[in-house]
Every structure is written in C-alpha cells, then in structure tokens.
Length: 405
Ligand SMILES: [Zn+2]
Image 1 (cartoon, rainbow, N blue to C red):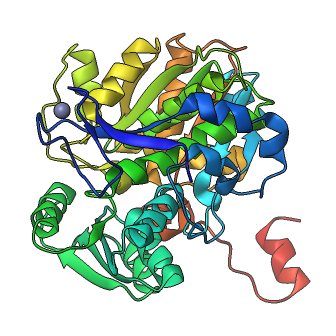
Image 2: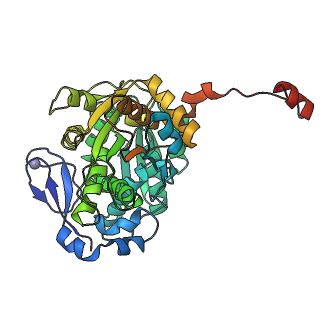
C-alpha cells in the first residue's frame, strides 16, 4: 500500500478519503493528496531510490498508487548541462530538464501515468480529458496501454501535428468549437453525467502528483540538491506547483537540504493571467482570452493559478511573460545552442530566462534549471521560416559552385 493518507482541501483543510474527486464540497477549494511522511522516511533512502528502475516510477513510494503502474516508459529524462546556452546568456551553471523525451513528447506522461493507474484502481472503464493537445496524446496512449476506452476533448483550432499525436492511439477524438476553457467547462459538465475517469477533473489530485517527479528527478540529478532557480512554464499552474512540492518532499525525507529554490513562472504575454495576478499583487486570478502560439499554456482561467502565484512569491521567485516573437527566438536559441527542439512553450521559458538574467534576477553563478516540457516537431508549422535549403545537382561540381568552394 502507498503512503498516501487522504485528500485534503487546500483552503479549509476538510479531509476526504482517497476517492475520485475534483474539489472540496465545503468551499470548492482545490484538493491535494496528503502522505504519512514519517512512515515514508523509514523506507525511502538514496540507496533504495537509486536501485529502482530508471523511470519516474523509481519514486513510486512518493506517489499515491497501490497497484502495478500503467507505464509506457516515462520519466528520468536528461538534465543536460547547457554550457552553450549558458555562455550565450551569461550563466555558468545552467541545466535544461528535457521532458521532450517522454514517450508522447511532453511532461504530461508523468501526470497521466499516475492518473490512469488510479483510473484502473477505481474501476473506471473509460478515461477522458480536456486538453490543449499534449494531454490528449498522453491520455490516448496510456488508455491504449491499459486497454481502457478514451474520449479526448481538444479545441478545434489545434494544428494537425497535435491531432495526429492523439489520434494515432485511436481514442474517441472530440474537437470542440471553442477555446480550451470552453473544452474544460464542457468536460466538467460531462463529468457530472458520465461515470468516467476524467484525468484532469475527478482524477486531478492524482494526476497532479505525477508531475512531482520532475522535482524529484531534478533534485537527484543535481547530485541530491535543490537548484537556486527553476524557470518553468505555467498553463493551469499545476505542474509549476508540483515541481516545488517534489523538491520539498526530498527535503522532508532528509535526502536534500531545506529548499531555497526561487521559482519563476513563465507565460506567454497573450495568455498571462498568473503573471498579471503576481504583478498586481492579487490573490485572485482574472481570467483572460488567450491569444498566443504557445497553445500548451494557452489557458485563460488557470485552475491552480492562485497557488502558482503563492509559490512564486513565497519562494522569492517571480512571474514573467514574453511575446510570441520572443518565444520563437527562444525556440531557435535553444535548438541552435543545445540541440533541443522545443515547442513554443519551451521558447517562452528560454525567453523568460533571458529576461531574468538581463534584469539581474538570476546571477551568473546561480545553479539554474530551465524546464522544457514539450517537443517542437508536432508544432513545426510555426517554425517554417527557418528552412533555407540550398538545392544542388547530385554532383561535386554543383555543390562546390553553390558554396563557392
Ligand atoms: Zn474546502
């Protein structure tokens, strides 16, 4: 059995059993899984962890699952020392956590692996999700692996790369004539009618926990220490908050020193409700209508936005936004210095990092981790302008002449 104890409301503290649940009945607050860390401490050690499989499931003892996991090979993605990019930006200790290298090319596999495992435990025969694209692919893939039926709901204006990424696993693919926020609202309504495991609604507390493994891996891969700074994207804000939780759990278990990491939210200026709330010193998020190429984080009404603002503030970090143009430059900079082709959200992260260094918020010696959460090839249409090929005949002479040799 896992060390998970209960679900607890983040606002009023009301506790619930470990069941499918979206929010608190008393105050409609968000709910989190709580754990018996004292018991966990007795079995979890660096040696034990290092002997586990090289995947996110090496942190099984820190996750709320009681059964064999639904795993398509997720996690333990590279934490690459980014010396070229660091040199470009003026940073000596820069790392890139490359979650493009998960099975469906985004960090979502972490969250979905846990949520689909719980869906089986709860006896659901169907899973569903509201998605901006990456989650749809991950849910469809995990449903295929788990022999579950699936319905994935996406905005109808997504590019064909993201559609194919989900459709290849043969889910019931539902395109909704509206924004992600409309898709999400539809799924909340459907979740009251259909007894399905909605990955980011009634399974959300478990889904959230999968993202913690990003924090666990960063701590372990840095040689059991927390970084000085983390720059991560925020759509709903949930993953951002879970990197923080993951790092702090390592500290609770005595595996690393107390966490002093400064956590920086990155958003696209065309969809930056979390950054707005941070800058206005507001505890509440004012929803916006997203307009950005960074579709993966184009969420106008972020469900964990308030919590993300709280963590950015309490950790001494911040929340920054960049234009789509800056994001495109960020994608190219990462690809052309470190060989990593990220989607627009990754470009947002790199562009925010650049701004933070220029503003003196991140110092040259700071141990800094930029979290790249999704790969670029599925949305390559936005980068078509990089192609400048030279056409030659299949002869040495033609090549020499084309390149002035
Ligand atoms: Zn409550």
